[in-house]
View: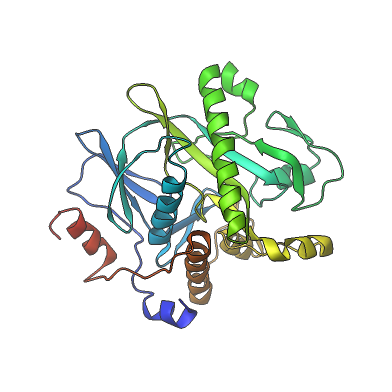
Length: 323
């Protein structure tokens, strides 16, 4: 889809997915969740875009792109790790098993990259070499590949607070995970990341880093939750231009929410200042980035689903709830 096609459909945006008839509503930064009595959870991906622990804007079709990209990856990795998926009743909705989310967020990184306060590049440029229980060598340049993939765990801020860096020793000492859980999460994360890098490379992409969230099922087994390898949870670069741009010291070509993050960072300190209103053209360009990301990652053509009324009206109908 080009910008003009997106502009014509820009009103199809889902900024809020509150459905009063559904029980146990929890509103996250991007998703609205509802816990049902049968042990399942309805997860609706809104079009909200979040960075710096804040909501920045709503991007048309973002929720649909995230849900369908995650669906592709859940299907491609089901042999590695059990996941929470039960059904997809709507392009923006997944029904999953309700899990007890583990209090550690797992990020796997293979490059010295990032813009947030907890990214390895930010910490490295501040002079740190020991981080997340790993020592990085001196002399690395921004966006350079690391000697090997590493896990950079953070605390999971359930109350809307800031995620904080952790080390494996801290995770065990604080009782956040058992030793067996930490081993299982690490093994799953590295295997999922390796599969993601392999399939991304076949599409001409570099999977740079990614975030995973895991939970426990009633039997204690560890299950992959939330999303996987989407443009929100992952950083992708175009492989063809990486070497040349790295040699020049230029930022790699990407399609992830760094597009919006970089616009914001250029205009304010997003951790302290009010966020400027993001112009409509930037919103539409970001929507185009998400659509392109879906098509490039999955090899599928993005066709917006028809909307009679609002996106939320369609979701309600597909869930069997009167509008």
